[in-house]
Length: 241
Ligand SMILES: N[C@@H](CCC(=O)N[C@@H](CS)C(=O)NCC(=O)O)C(=O)O
Image 1 (tube, protein in one colour):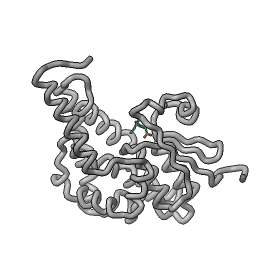
Image 2 (cartoon, helix red, strand yellow):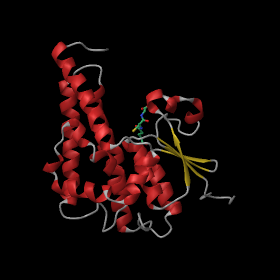
Image 3 (tube, helix red, strand yellow):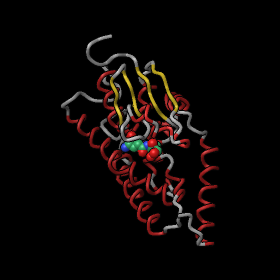
Image 4 (tube, protein in one colour):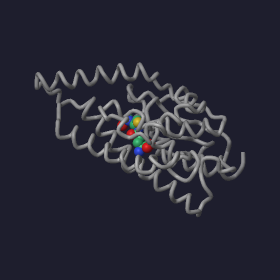
């Protein structure tokens, strides 16, 4: 094994959620050899000590390359892009203008879209109380963030420059699921076309499969059940706190 990364011994710890799918899109686009390990967050496996040793934050995804660990989906994508995408197929040259444009969109997803849409999902689908204020606050903010993507995607195919990069890969698994919180994506035609463009890539299906993601129709059915349960809670005013 070489003394410095890359070690060509990739193990990816994931589950079929948006954050889990993000780095898998890159691993699959690059055709890299990696072991995929399912960490079942429904069984709280992400809080087990063996996993906390890889990601002290106890959340998927995480990556190991030999003994080196990387956690946080954005950091994983940067690691893989920096060390394994030598031809810069899905990233840009360090220090170039487009590199910082790409990083800006990546951070927009990591610090904005992901956390806000995560809260929208929580309040609309999972909270133990029916909280109209929480729902509205986070769904409205998610819509606002998607409208920022629309400003760019109404006039360009990709977020940064003229190619598919880790910036697009970071936002896609989140935005494509916005219908779950009743966001009508047809109001964002540029975003809608971009979602389709990425969905049609062969690596996208492979990435979803590597994470054990549910088929879209099954996911829709599950979300509809969660919404119905939440709406019933509004009627009965029976919180589960
Ligand atoms: N900022 C983190 C967020 C990771 C995250 O929230 N992962 C979720 C799944 S999408 C998770 O592990 N949830 C289980 C938990 O919070 O315990 C990243 O981008 O990697």
